[in-house]
Length: 129
Image 1: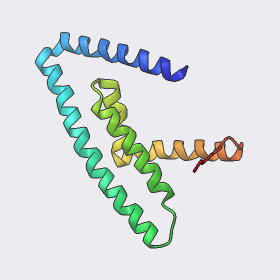
Image 2: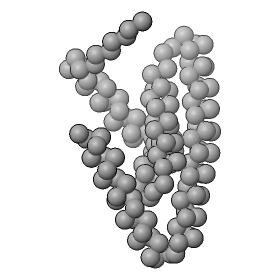
Image 3: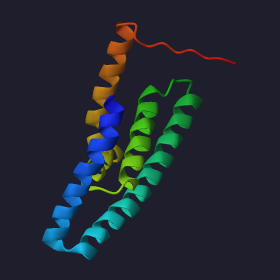
Image 4: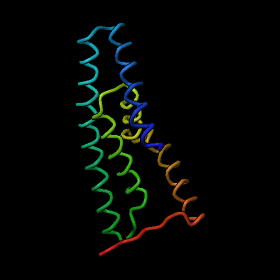
């Protein structure tokens, strides 16, 4: 139910913001912002993704599990998808997830949430081969 609400409400809010922005700065400027943030977001996601993959390989070569780097990778993956989605709110969330400084705050939240799920026994992984 939450996903249905998310996928129906967010696009309407994004459209309303884009229409309002269009009223203030014009159609071509609004389209320019959407294209610019999409291109910049794709570049940032690619560069951050490569860096994270390098760190994961390095940690595994040192015999350590790359837990933090896997969470970083998840954040960059989701952030990159958000940046490729046209809209102002999704771009803001995407940049928060892709930029390393702001990603640290989100990473702490994700780690806490995952730890609570493990502590409460709510993590059930079923693998079928």
